[in-house]
Every structure is written in structure tokens, then in C-alpha cells.
Image (cartoon, helix red, strand yellow):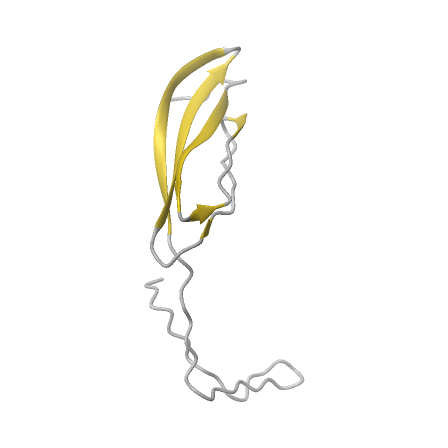
Amino acid sequence: MPLVAGTNIEWEVVDVSNVIGATSGSGPIADPIVQQLTNTSTVIGTVTYRVKTELNGCYGGSTDYIVEVHPLPKVNLPERSVICIGENGEAFTSVLLDTGLSE
């Protein structure tokens, strides 16, 4: 479906679980919703946004979008790990960090 010039979107945060940074707002339909969401727990958090279109004061239907926010990985360094960097930025020693992430 083509975008109609002058169409805006309005989004409302309708549910939040274990996440900070979600806010309601509006903007041109072609612009993405840009928010920094941070998980505040050790389990997957969620934010539900209700999004609707608006053109010249007329509103379209709304759609709910659920965004999953995964917790930050816990990085465990091997005991007594030391990383040495030379004055030119080269590493003399290294440590493998396994976050458990697949990508």
C-alpha cells in the first residue's frame, strides 16, 4: 500500500513489563519510532505499542505491536583475567568472552 503524503502515526504505550524507555508519541508515517528500550530484569521484557494513522484529523484503525526486550548478557571473565594493550593499541593477551548470544 503506498504512503499518502501528510499521513502521521500516533503510538501509545499500552503495556510495559520489565522495560524502561518506552514513551508515547507521534510523527510522520515514513519515520521509524526510535526509542532506546532497556530491560530492567533477567527475563524477557515487553512493550506493547498501539499504533494508528492520522490524516487531516481523520484516524484509521489501530494495531498493537509487542516488542520483546531481552536482558543484557552477563559476561563472566575467567578468574584472574588480565588483558594487556600496547601503546599502539595492539593486544598482548586476550580473553574469550562468551555471552551465550547466537549472533
